[in-house]
Image (cartoon, rainbow, N blue to C red):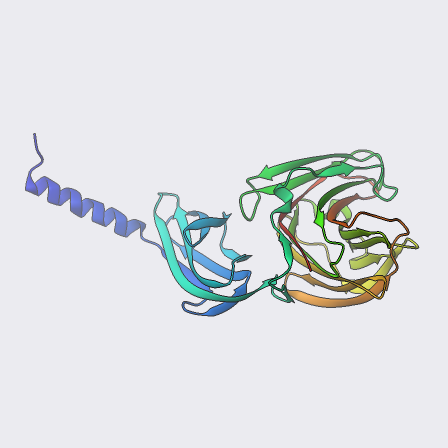
Length: 329
């Protein structure tokens, strides 16, 4: 039997009341509608609902580029020109809170402090690429670590696919090194290495290392930079003579399970590997140290590496890296 008009009206009223009860709001505080910005674009948003907000997503021109279980405060890459940014959130009932803005991107940068020219060679999502190699016996004397590498981790992740590195074992101060050769650029003299990292037990880590390198006939240029968590500062490596050198730049232990955004700017000048700057979570510090390359010839290839360091008790911990980018020109 067909529903009567009165039954239909009652259903509509009930549905409207239910939707109203579930109604929430989306506050998109950055970027501003109609603004001109640089990329990556800073997106900051939070949703409110009478029910538990379960998830967030950012869409760039209708394509999902970021997801989170909490309020958003992040940067998303984008090309120059006009774009539509939409942030949506879902509560426990399935109700959606959403808001969109149109912006114009006038240029690109790595993080918010390093300009990337349009002629730069760029690689993105390096953590998702195949061909990563790893070792423990080659990690600066820290052999015998028990470690594993797992790519394409949906959570925790900033973009839905991170790399997880487990470090453990029983040998104190043992490490694990991961590296990836990503291209060729023998004429390049400027380099930017940009990524996010996250530790579940920062107290268990002696430190973490980041490296960009260029293998030329004139020598192997290595920009190895260590966040010495035990000492609370950044250190840089003397690629010809060996040894870590203090920079005086703080690198404190982060809170557990928080994403840290770091950008390194390097240069090859006057026959040396020049450490220009380190930007950690938006704070830029200049290093201005340089070292001669290692006396080893190469084929013009460039690459990156990432290393996790064990402490005096070799306590287990996990590290995730995400949104890894490398630029050179």
